[in-house]
Image 1 (cartoon, rainbow, N blue to C red):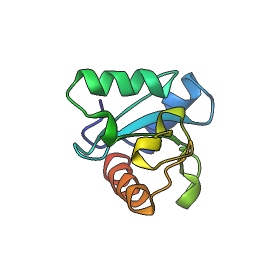
Image 2: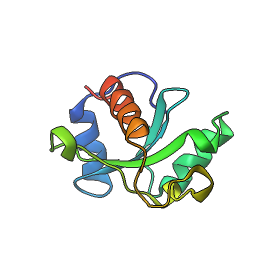
Image 3: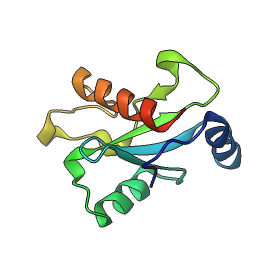
Length: 110
């Protein structure tokens, strides 16, 4: 669980050891923490739920440490498909939730 800042260099090392150019992460928008570096967003989601998070607060993203701006975060995960929350895609459809995720990531990745 990431609850204090890590560097882009640490993120690059994680990416190099897994998918090459990105790291999967799940953000808890209520607790303002995230998990990262698992093979599946679902594994990270399960970890957070086991540690007290609510599924409705969890959103899957991919982080690209060598990219900047809007390209750094990709809102794409199967765990984001939530018709009951009116999220009908693998992305994060609500701009307010996207902005919340961006703020949390910016506070945790320096």
